[in-house]
Amino acid sequence: MSTYTQILYQIVFSTKHRERTLIKESRTELYKYIWGILKNKRCYLFQIGGTEDHLHIITSIHPAVSLAALVKDVKLGSTSFIKEKKIFPQFSGWQDGYAAFTYSTEAKYNLIEYVKNQETHHQQKTFREELIAVLNQQCGI
Image 1 (cartoon, helix red, strand yellow):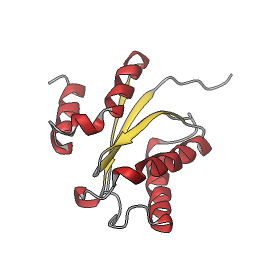
Image 2 (cartoon, one colour; image 1 turned 90 degrees about the horizontal axis):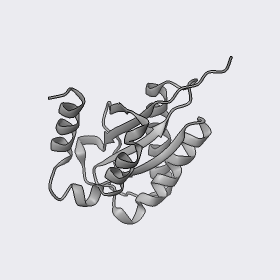
Image 3 (cartoon, one colour; image 1 turned 60 degrees about the horizontal axis):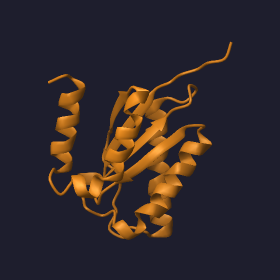
Image 4 (cartoon, helix red, strand yellow; image 1 turned 90 degrees about the vertical axis):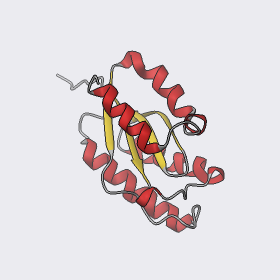
């Protein structure tokens, strides 16, 4: 019997000290690199986006890959890529830890749109306010 899962993850993490170092002009290059990491881990990327100080990744994770190992690989690989390519000169690293949430597959399109609109969304809410709201929503508060 084969292993089958249907779990949609939203993974969120920020730059160290929430420094606003991920300049818009170079983010697409970073997103493509992270997509490659996910693809190599046999994970499916639905959407990636963010702002100057954090990223959101909407993905399904291959059953043989642990969430913690995947986030570690994304952070380590992208840090090396950023420093090698010098695409974000002020970047000093990623925060310790991350947030990850699971959703039903019915939420996929809303999540994709939400991540696509991060720039607009964060004109009204800070990263901290956003994360607290998502945590409250997940807990039913």
